[in-house]
Amino acid sequence: MKENTKYIFNMEITNGYVFRQLFEIYDRLVVNVIPIYFKETGVTIRTGIIDNGKEIISDMEIFTDDIIYYYLNTALSTIPKNKKNKACHVEQFNINKLKNIFKSISKSNSVRIFKLKDNEDISIEIKGLTIERSYLPKVSYQLIENDISHLNNDKIPNAKVDINQFCTTMKAMSRGDVDIIIFKVYKHGLLIVGKNNNNENIKSSSWGIIGNNCYETKMNINIIKALCKISGTTFYSIIKVYSNKDGELKLTHKISDFGEHTIFLLDNFKNLP
Image (tube, rainbow, N blue to C red):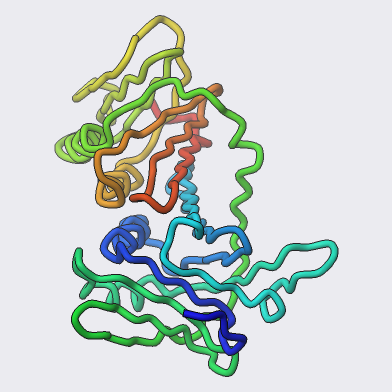
């Protein structure tokens, strides 16, 4: 496929099913609009929600060197390329419309997403034995503030957890009488505790070395339910856990063989048990 100036952007991912799973995470977060940043060196999908003082920010990076095809028209981008800035094109997707299109993606399908310079709609092709084409209408731009620059300084993880074990634990925690989940991050370990509204321990799981000192981050069940879906975005991966401050937790994992997902859990509500 040759570069063609009729496109604003043109991206194809062979593992379409994993791409579908990425947006199912956002569906669980009850996010209505998803911003996607098409850059010269990669694609970023970033959004977040606040639930009763608890915040989750999801930052997905797609490495365009690792997907089958990627093209960005730097002259027609939202931010055109010039001497001071690299090009970046911003689109916002309605999650409900996208979910309806992606529900037909199977594990054998690839997905192509592109926009023509003379068309406001975004085109999506689901490619298998046949090609199914759909269109996403333009969504009015809404400024979404999710600055993560001050949260991304940790280099060495405190713990590493098998992603399937982690998701199984999240599913178990989200059932029954658990109201609050507490992540206790130690120097070389992680303890997850589920409590009810009476501050009673209901469930717990641990990995690594559990010592005396830790950093704690509390999360609501609604946010935890979204974490149950992340195992669908990768195979045989691990989750790296980072924390060096109470109320701030970072989780990272691979997205198949073409990206990385970083999740920030922020606890700004200190009156819960």
